[in-house]
Image (cartoon, rainbow, N blue to C red):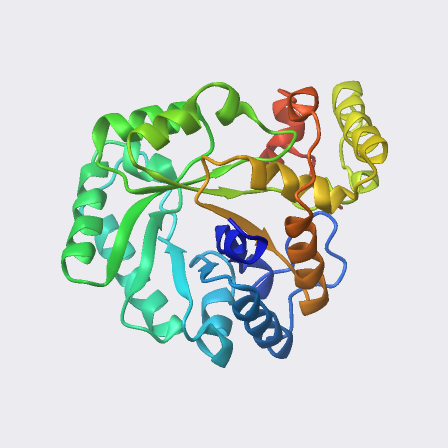
Length: 298
């Protein structure tokens, strides 16, 4: 596949369009005019998918008001419930939330609708939520349905209970846990599309000095990452996207940018196809790999 053709494996992450997101983000939320410039640049580069969510602040609304969104497939996510049990009223909340998502996006349907927290599907009564997803698909408002997950247990339980069509999961050159434990291979065998997020670990792989962690394990892993990039003569961005490009199990690699200039750099890094000893970089330190466990910033 040519570089131009392989770029279709990239998806544009839109969380920065609605929130000041990422440990290295000093610029804040991306201005609407810059969002339009990014979308037009992405279209010219061959991308066709944008990833957003109801929980991403004003992201859906900004996208819906941006002319550049035309022609893109949209992946969005349900309102997180975080309930110990899902009842009929919860489904009403999710249904109304999705209706508002479509209104904000200014379109009658989306390509994929994911349950933002897999726990909502796995909790007692989660089948009610799945029935809602199937109803939206039958009505033509969604092409594919699935969930956003964090780990192997989420994937295993979802596959046991539901005919999931698409899964979004964390993956990076350091966080290869779902690759090494066979989860990605299992999803491929089941015909489930995989969208990978957190390729830059909220920007930490691009700027390790911004790490909020002080443990020796995290420090060693980030130092090993930096040294591998230097030894290979590649930038951190090239290495991060080189890993994603080399991981053929993923259908879409979701990248977030704050400017058209950053997007152009990302495309160039993807095209470079950096090749490192990926296995040498793999890390199992959950305190580093899961941003939910990072200490709060002051």
